[in-house]
Amino acid sequence: MAAPSLRPVPPPAPMSAAITAPLDDTATEPLRAAPRPAPASGDVEVVHDADHPQKPGNDDPVRAEASTGPALPVLPNIHRVIWRTIVKSWDDGIIGWAAQAAFWQALSLPPLLLGLLGSVGYVAGWFGPDTVDVVYARIVDFADRTFTPTVVDDLITPTVDSVLGRGRIGLMSVGFVLSLWAGSSAVSCFIASIAHAHDQHEVRNPVWQRFFALFLYVGFLSVAVFLLPLVALGPNYLRAIVPESWGSFVTTLIDYGYFPFVAVLLLFVLTTLYHLALPNPLPWHRLIGGAVVAGVFFWLASYLLRIYLTKITEAGVSYGALATPIAFLLFTFSLGFGIVIGAEFNAAVQQFWPAKASTTTQVRHWVNSQTSDFTGQLRTLPDRLSSGPIRRHPRERERG
Image (cartoon, rainbow, N blue to C red; front, side, top):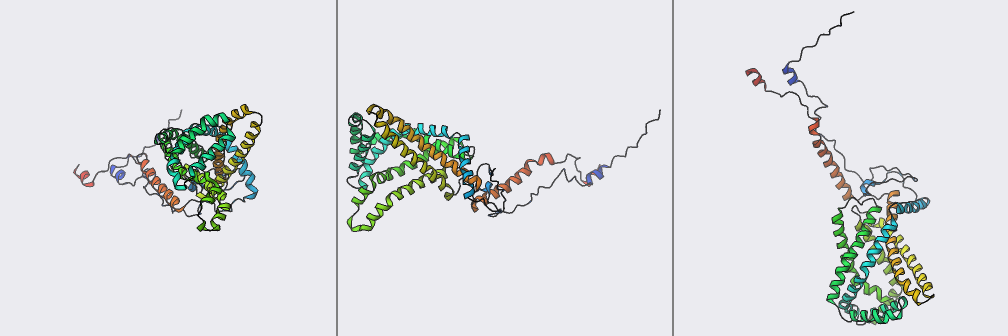
């Protein structure tokens, strides 16, 4: 049996050599983050795939970042955008969002109407001396076409007459308190559905989102108090109260520009809602398409509901009275459905044609990336420090 060969063990290096030896580069990597240039307007490349559009996470414009290559053509990909909108809407539960929004709208509308009617008595004089009478006539006329004569004569007419006769502070306070709770819940549902459509539902704090919905609801109410009489009066009454000294140009402008003005106003309100609901908002002009889709859908749904009410009331008075609450619920459901489908359309357009981030957004994200690199180096510093022997001064070694 052969004896095992013994290999000589090299003597240990002296401590002075260990101390003066250079440190391992991998153990103590210098804390020098490579500087990144600030992103330009088109420095990032996005691969466009018609079948699998890019999904930029939280839908932040700087994450989607503008493409340096040719953009997808619009007309050949419209059907893909429509199909993507339908699939994404179904996956996000659009029926549930619309039903939840309809419930809160139905719960908030009666106290809201009472509160608005109580406040109209104070501001109606600003629009002319006959504003209260015109609003009263329009409400009663709408009620005659919707409810039974007994309900109109015994309930609606006395209530509207009493509320519009003079402003009611108590009615305003109670009505607005109830409507603030239910109405802000409806707005919160809209905000959550819009943020969910853009995959931004985990960005904003839920508590802050609830308060944000309350503030947004109060802002919309403040605007509605002044715009509701203007929209409800109609072009005929506006043309009648215009002074003759203004000339025929103003009356012609009212005749041809009233309904386009109302349509543009509604589109502006919807676009504002889409913009404010997103924690990382898209540019205003990129949200107009969803507002148009929501407005067209709501107009078609309202037209079909009017046909439904007309047909069902021809069957008898009892069926007409039963159809009224059903039509009201369908009305609120179609409003919520239209708003959600518009948000899904905007999200689909953003996935196929990402919006270009503004300069302010690009600079903010560049600063965040630089600070995140430096803090990441500091966070991993304890793991990368070597644990070698303690370095001593040469004079202390000579004394020892």
